Image (cartoon, rainbow, N blue to C red; front, side, top):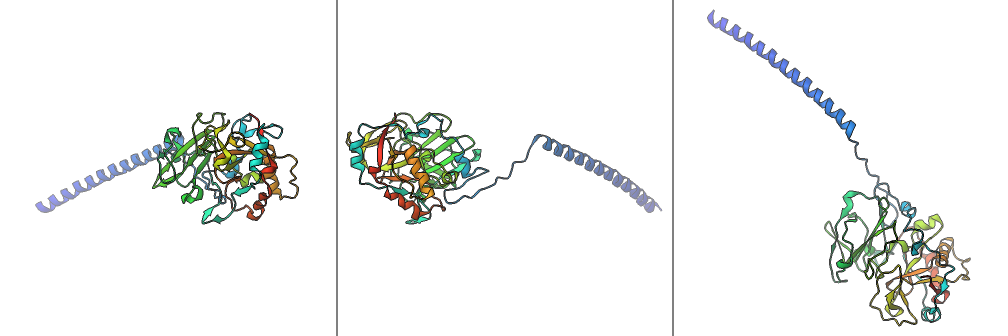
Amino acid sequence: MSNLSITSSHLIRRMKLIKTYNQLNFGLIILLASLAVSCKKSTKATETPDPIPVVVQPPSTGTTTCSATLADAENLQLFPADNPWNLDISKAAVDVNNTEIIKKLSGYTIKNDFGSGLWDGKTIGIPYMVVCGENKDFVNVVFRKNSYDDNYGSESDKGPYNLPLTAPIEGEGKDGDSHVIVVDVKNKKLYELYNASLNTKQWEASCGAIFDLTTNTMRTEGFTSADAAGLPIFPGLIRYEELLKGVIDHPIRFTLEKDNIQPAYVYPARHKVNSTGATANTLKMGSRIRLKADFDISSYSKNNQIILTAMKKYGLILADIGSNFYISGAPDSRWDNDDLVKLKNLKGSNFEVVNFH
């Protein structure tokens, strides 16, 4: 009797404890649910989930990120309207030294230093990337010398640079100038590197420059850039996207060998080179030449006519030391190499030196 009484009493107390415990658990569950709902509502009211980036893969000109496209770069005003990069020079005066300079250049023919496909295992031309200013892609660049060229970090913009790790390198970084070009359409900035390489996740280069596309501010006088002349490269490239618009509205970048360049420069160039040309019959860095107005372009293809029209209206701008009369453009799978090569019919004698400064 005594043991049974004790057991029953124990069971009654145990059942009461279980009931109390369940009531506490139920109350705790209600409280936690209430807090969860409260937090969820608070999150919706104060935070917006990040959008999923849309990656656009253009032809072999490079890549784009976010919602930026290659066409966005063409819709971007590259420097103010009164900047030399945007000036029509078709009516500008001929330079006083035109006869002597053209005489020296007369035997050279135009060579398109861009196209589709590969040449010697590398893309043909200077590629570029278009981005929309993501904070995650802003990085510092290490300026250094290597076996190809020296360290021009003292003349470089310190950054940070908007350079995704996937930005293409000219010539795949195998040899040559290894330029890297990124156009930031959101912030309207241009980022360019010379002799660049990617060391694990760190960009390295001999020189770098950042251009604000909304101003006429160029490099500090005497400073180089990713180009020997201290000029931006991107505004002088022939890009396939321009042909889709039907117009090239800027001068075209071209190169000459050292003996055709004098150690001097004219605006918008900011830097001279260690060249060997005589003053009377050679060009300065930044000099402009234009295709003569009476040169007949009617037999050329539509695409080549767009290029030739730009040569008449905006001319060519001397930007770097290189092979004689090589004009620069971006690689693209849509170029017709057989058509582009017809530009070699143009000789130095078909041009004239312009004095528009």
